[in-house]
Length: 133
View 1 (cartoon, rainbow, N blue to C red):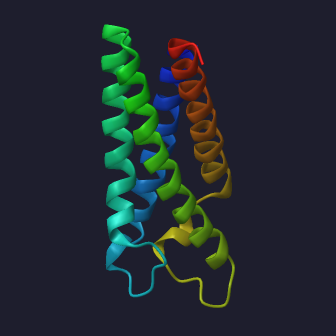
View 2 (cartoon, rainbow, N blue to C red; view 1 turned 30 degrees about the vertical axis):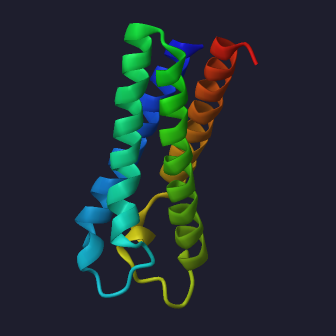
């Protein structure tokens, strides 16, 4: 289960990187109208990468504290991702949908979110299994 979580995490990172490239190619933060706070746009991938590094350390050491640390990082990532998703969803197709995020393909957003939720569940279950709760 731990390596399935790693694979899911990497897939989510690839899909997220694709979305970030699209956002930047369409003007990113330099667009006049955006629903995405720049701190969340920067913080979301940074927290995800930090969590992934902690997860890799867990895989190398097999210490439950690192698994729980990665889960904590994922909590932050999921909350930020949910904020980005709802802001993207609200602006999608609306009269004022002019931000760079409106160029996101819905399928890419769905894959990124679905794999991210899968990662979250796998990491949580692994951490629970390690602590015997």
